[in-house]
Picture 1 (cartoon, helix red, strand yellow):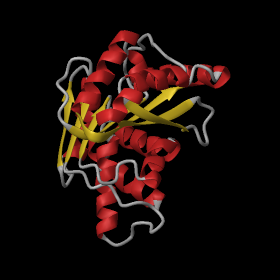
Picture 2 (cartoon, rainbow, N blue to C red):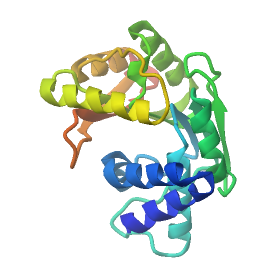
Picture 3 (cartoon, rainbow, N blue to C red):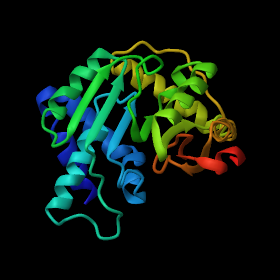
Picture 4 (tube, one colour):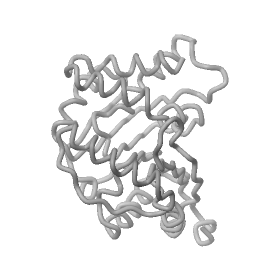
Length: 243
């Protein structure tokens, strides 16, 4: 079923050109995070989705594919319910990626848009889940903390942040991760920026200090990378003081 989902999701990018289509197919085939979020139910029941650093909005197209497959009665029984978003807001700094996203967005069955803006400056709408995959290290340490605090405010009570980072404590694989990250950035036609990275322990301490509970999940299956998915749930009420 995963193969059918990723092919359906990537097919919407054919109209944007061969590079965009092949990038979508390759990303969904090789990157374990998308399948993992579905198998774990990280997006289930969360209707308002904010995707920061969304690129060509692959997540939006994948969620539409999930909705369609579930509606056809072919959703895997062992998986949690398919995500059924009502609103998707993507934020992407690179105009080229925003343009590549448009053919897919026009074919979705829910309110979806991508804003060309800096995630440090854009107004964050109220949301049930925020997704940040492999981009937070492109802004400085203070800016990271400021953005995460704003995200907590934008999240509804018990809202969720899905944040993938590279663990600096995994020295060998972190070096490979950073090297590949730079190559992919250049191939996509973007300038390679400086980075501000942390260990998973440091990320968890930061998030807990801002009022999140955090679960760290290895997210490098089938790859040589140091990637970890931080599943951070907003803590509310008296529990926030003990996070």
